[in-house]
Length: 534
Ligand code: GLN
Figure 1: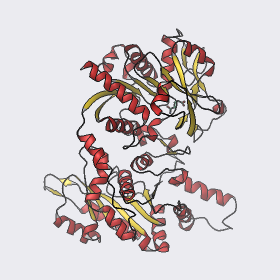
Figure 2: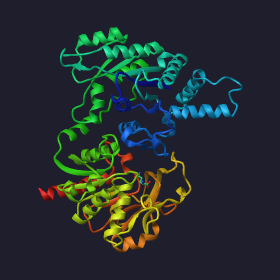
Figure 3: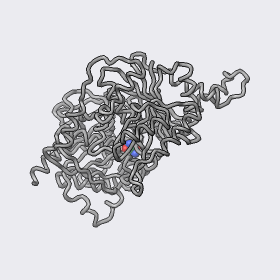
Figure 4: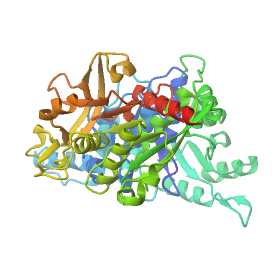
C-alpha cells in the first residue's frame, strides 16, 4: 500500500491534521479509498488523561479509543471510519516493546531505540486496511523535537525498505511575513528541511502556510534551497471563512495531482467536488442565530472542537450563520450573571469532568427550561439538566450527581455499575459506540427517523434508573435507552420547543455534508425562536 507521511516544521499548530484530512478528502474525490493515522510522540498511552485545556478535546472513535482531536478532522473530511490502530503514541510503542522484553522475546539482546523501537513503529505502519488505496500518516509535534526522532528514523527506514516510489514525504511549514522587510521569509523553512535531510528524509512536497501569495521567484528559491521541484512548493494561504475551504485551496494548487503522479496512482473517476456547495452555504447564509455554549474550558478554542464543528454543520444544512457565544460556566455562578444568558436563541451545555462550574451549568439548564429557550445537553450537560429538573421541578433541592456529592441524599446521577471498583484513570470509562433504542412518538425518534441508532460514549456516571418514574410523571420523557442494559441515553421535555439531553456524544458523528440530526433539530428550534423574536 502507498503511504503519505505528513510532518510539520518551524512552529506547532500549523494545521497538519487539517491538511492531512483535506488531502484525504481530495483523494476520495478521485474515487480512491484512504486510511488516515496519527502518531503522537508523547508518552501518555492515549490523550484520555490529558486536560482539554492543554491538548484540546479528547476525540472518541467508534471502538472506544480515546484520541487526539486530529482524528476528528480526518473523520469529518473523509468517509474513513477509524479505530485503535489509527491512533498511536510513543507511550503505546514503548509499552509494547517493554512487554516483549518482559516476555523474553528479544532473546537476550540489549533492547534499544534502533532497531527495537523503530521496528515496533514500522510494524504499526504495516497494519493497514487491504481495501484502502493509500494511507496518510501524520506525525505529531515539530521537526527538531527530541521525542519525534524515533518516528522519523522509522519513516526513513520504511521508505528505504519499501521503495521510494511508494512513499511521499509531505512537509508542512511556515513562511512568516515580516512587515518591516515587506516580504515572506524562507529561512525557517530551509532550516526545517535541512533538519529533515540530516535525518535522511528528503521531502517530496512542501506545503507552505502563508498569509500572502508566494511569488514565482519565491517558489523557485524555496525549490532550489530545499531540493524539491517548483511544482511541489504548494501554497496554503490562511483560510478566510471556514476550514472547509481547504480541500478547494489545495485542489487549485494541484496537490492531489502531484500526489497521484508521485505515487503512480490512477484516479478511479473524474474529480467530484462536494466542497463548493458547502462553501456557498457558508458564505451566503440566509439567516442567523445565536447559540450560547456553557462550559468550563471555553478559554481553549480546541476544547470543544467537535461541538463547534457539529454546530457549523447544522448551520451549513440550514444555510444559517451560527454565532457562538462562549460562556464560562463558573462565571455563571455569581448572582448577577443572568445577564450572560440574555439574548440567546439556544443554549448548549457540552461534556465535562470535575466540580468547577457545575452550578453554572445547572443554572443554564434551569434558565433554558423555564424561559422556553432551546436546550441541548451533552453528557455532563445532560446530567446537569437532570439535576436542575430534580431540584426545581421535583422539589428536591438536595439533588446532585454522585460525581460531585458522593454521599448525597438524592443522587440523580450515579456511578455506573461497571465503574464501582475502578481506580485506574486510563481508558476505563464506558467508551465507544453503543446502540440506543428510540421511543415511538418522541422528538428524538422523529429527528433521527429510525428506531435504533448508534452513538459514541465517554462517561463514568449515568442517570439513576430508580428515579425514572418520578421524572416521567413530571413531564421529562426517557426517549432513548440502551437495548442491552436499559441505560438511559436520552431525556426530553414534551412541553418545550426543544429540550433534549443525551448521555452520548453526537458531535463525533457529524459531517459537513451531513449534519447530525440532533444538532440540526436544535439549530432549527433556535432559528425558529430567532425568527419569532425578530
Ligand atoms: N463526568 C461525567 C461522567 O463521567 C460526564 C462525562 C462527559 O461529559 N464526557 O459521567
